[in-house]
Image (tube, rainbow over all chains, first blue to last red; front, top):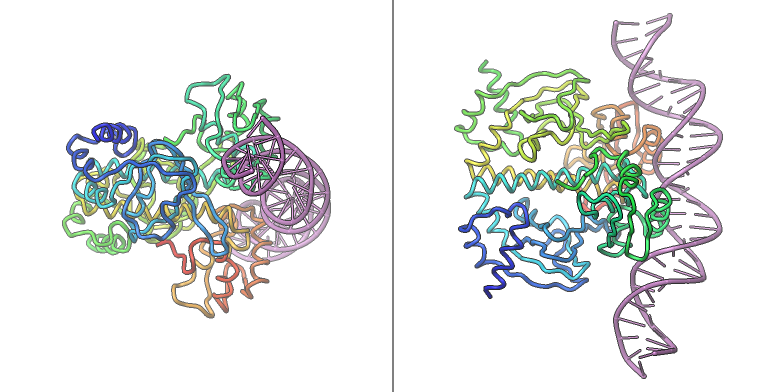
Length: 240
Length: 240
DNA sequence: CGAGGGTTTGAAGTGCATCAAATAGTGTGG
DNA sequence: CCACACTATTTGATGCACTTCAAACCCTCG
């Protein structure tokens, strides 16, 4: 039990807008939350479902998506450790604006949305932190829009890889694709076939080596040159 | 003077998150703000400029954009009456995350960002309203992402027209394009030439008539059928 | 009236999607 | 440990949508 509390506190410390949450606030929170494991394929909620909880990702990957009337799916985001999702349900009509599905076995902390709105209302400092978080999230999404309209398929993949590279490392990096290539493809707004071919074009242009789900990057700068000229955030473009 | 105050108060009443602002808050505000006219072409600020003010649009149109290293421009949004912009500068690094340029002569109210952060910190109810606003803004941008990846050019234009139709009206609507076709094109992530041709395809498919900047829509439902099947927000999809 | 930007049209090229099929990879039960 | 089923990924062929470049047209405004 105590171990679980410790885990939750550690996890929250890494997550905006909770990273410097005071002991008092944590005290209120710990009674309310649970940390659980979820299997791949599990659907947490769907778009327009009434919303009660939002989630903090401790580990694993979660796909956020929307579905059109004719059945196609658009991937809004794929989130992981240190991200939160579902917080949109605290506002608007208390409905989720996207669906959420586990794509790699994940541990999640579920927190009542009521806790979030109460905290915002009662604690001005926390409200600022929350707004700060929302603003950065928004600028992240704005960049997605830009990326879709200004970068071609190989460039978008390069951009995606750059975000996986530990910051500071510029040579001989090995990164691991965090989830299916098919999902990466739809995350980047392209078809799986296009992804496969674009990946080859990227490799030809930057000298990276692809072996299954492993990518060996000899020179990070080559990817920067290849991808970032068509993007308005210079490198490093990690989402603030 | 008094007339100006009246105008500002009326304008703010139509704008989230200020629509039901109390008299006290307005009292603090009125000393700080000004309402001015700006000519077409005027650049208010650029991406990464240090931010002091955010703006409320009383009338006119303002383009929000980002520029890449190779000089291309991505239009993030084009806002008008009832919208605010630049509020992102209150958070993050106190920098604007996009540039702003007047595209149709506009009247704007400039409000110090410090007023915004103080109000959020001091007034819990207002903080909630602000977050509500940010959440709806975000879901709007998420829809843009979706729209870019799931709808083709003529469908995106149809979607754009639907947002110009007064709600409820379903037959014999005449709408007026609010700004240059070239700008609409880049707002929708396409080239002017593509816009021109796609507009014709839309007209062929839905029976609308284009005369210069005027669009005559005999049957709104035809546009809905044409555009909305590839979108996850049903009609009406006005941005909440 | 003439200059300049906005808009349309034409022709040609590119990139991505689609359909179809082969191949690799993964987990299953025998 | 192998055979099988099933999924993920790659490859090929083809078509369409959008872009690009070039030029004409239109409209407005000095």
